[in-house]
Figure 1 (cartoon, rainbow, N blue to C red):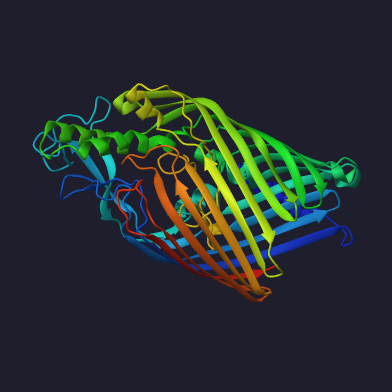
Figure 2 (tube, helix red, strand yellow):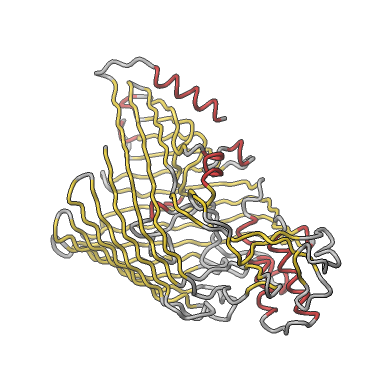
Length: 527
């Protein structure tokens, strides 16, 4: 696969083209960031060797500190030679020094009051489960720091992607080049990024019918939804995406979309790994160390954290999106339904959760000028949520899952809860269930922008975030979030940026310490 791309581009670059009919566009950028994050909550469960048990004190509890410098270097070139089109782009991903949790091999131990111990302690007893002798779990001890890219070891990122983000060849066809066909690696977007917004490998055709008459823009794509080369990841799961947009003017569109995804590579499984662990976490809060119930739940946690999950099934999305001028304001919207059926399995515990899917998405954004320098706006986001399929099966509830699932969504409405802010281009995409642990999110918010100078901009936003479904601790309120960003571009190629955000956790979480994020950045861009 990689050799084929390199050959194709060697041929593309060798094609003769007269200067009058050729066009090359280059881009080189360096982005530097310093980030300080405090009290970020997470569903991480780590094994404590000293306590011989999982540390539950950090589960969905705001705590800890993470300060680091990072950088991203990108370069790209795009060519037009008559009807022939091509592009090549690479970037390093977000480079930073990062220490990952160590790995502990744990075993069931009848001699331990927690039911667990580490392999080699000579206290190991029965198997962890019928299908698992021992389990390798992440622990509280950290490994030495190493260079990472997009949150994984740099060598692994190079091996699986070659740092190549775009590598496509295409042809512009028809009268006024109204049709464009592209094959290779490129960035694909489905449902305005709520379903997929990342690089992938495949084929895409777009048709700008406005170039020949009707004010319509059509598109179709068939691609592997992963940044990794398909051969490296073993991907055999394609996504099909179709769209049709009506274009009443140059900057307006209103349309519909349809997408289908067939999971053959356990892509959906990790969305619900936390759901298999959550019941044990809650059960342990009511058990005393040394009791049979405590030991049983600790062993179950070890199995769920160390065992592979399996999934297969299909998902489909249909909806509408657009951007229109309404009474002097700009209205953007996305609405969609997620439909499908899939099964998640945890073979080590002989658990299987078949479920149908019916998720909903609604996103509205309204912006209006309030003078030459000020823009005011508001937004509303609804991503439906539900109890995890395994929990519904345990409680004997109907199997249908009501959360809106995305394959690699990219949502930027707020800077802490979502991926917005001056470092949003650094965000690594990943499959995710909506909200926290799939509980969904409802987020009404306000925005304001002030541009006192051509090179200086202030952006502020505030949102109140809640979950449609009650969380594991009985609450639904994620909390209010306030974000502020400042950008200054003294030169066309130089931008300085700063950001300060705070989220005040509500009763969805186990703690109330404010979650904060501060980012300082510099961007150097040559085009």
